[in-house]
Length: 442
Image (tube, rainbow, N blue to C red; front, top):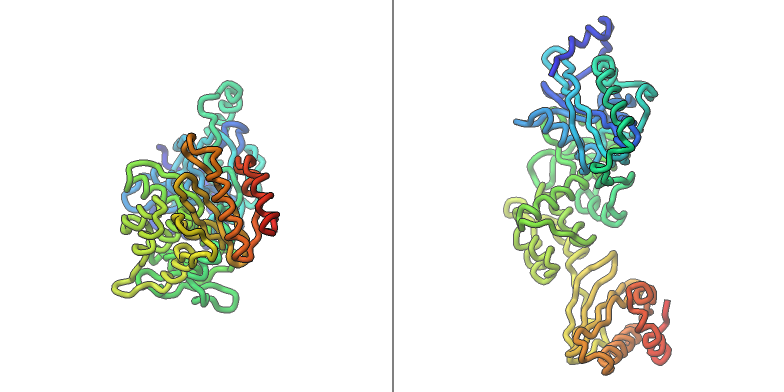
């Protein structure tokens, strides 16, 4: 890979003041989409060096990483993209002892990156139609590798009508993060309820309540002295919010990697499972130190999870455990009017404010959700598994117990669940029983 001339060589000796490099070597890239031939650029955030300028995606090389490994990692960390990529070297920018390895990353389709705190915007552009102002590193890249980039784009445009085999949609094609406001509020409360380090509208680094590396904002662990030095001047609310989202996305990806490593297979997770384990990975860096707890969450064995959930800093139990237990593992008291002789299996918190239950009778079973705040019940499933037991009135009997229990608890029944879940066959029975016991349907 050719090495570029010195920085001064391509800026005619007019070196802008104030350029700083964190470490001795870094790697970055620009993206080009096969379907359009356009290039994705990043606009640096207000807390980054050269704020507001448009440039490449990347960062410093960590440990024993090769430049290509570093740019592959940075692609995922800075954009959230984990689809198909082809990485091509372009050239190495050098300024004194500092080197920046530039790559071209080819993706099948344009995607919308999930921005972290370092970048505040992104744009797909045709080659030559650059936004202003450009980062000096991108200007250098275009000056020294522009013809090579244009050649790749020309080939892609020429062949894009015939190239089919690589054209699968990328894994991430959304502009918003995937976390609910309720989950974000919970994380903020658990990590920094009193907004430690927040003064005059600015966030500053502070000692972690759990010991270890200093943090900033809502639990962002400061990696090293270079990052600490950079963050000492403080961060805005907007930047801290983006930093939190970036850290949570990274933690979520770590969860899926850890589970595959721990169990040898990829395991799909529902919202509750994903939030529980993302919380752990965000707080602790990974989930591998809690194999019994992770297994219980994966199996939805909430009784075991309730015994294994606790986290410690040294010998001290973390205060966040209580908030975690109340949000995800607290089991409601038995509902009044629950039928005798039927096995009741609490499922824990299955949605925001909704607790799940399963009733199992000798021939049929029924699952439902209950929101104690609004006293709303949701019927999810009613089934008689054995074909020989069907049409014998078992499911109807269980439904009647259910409607009577809703009435006893002064509740209403959300009918949307059975009209959309394949239970339309039970519609007339539910409506008849609701009318008989004067249960309001919503």
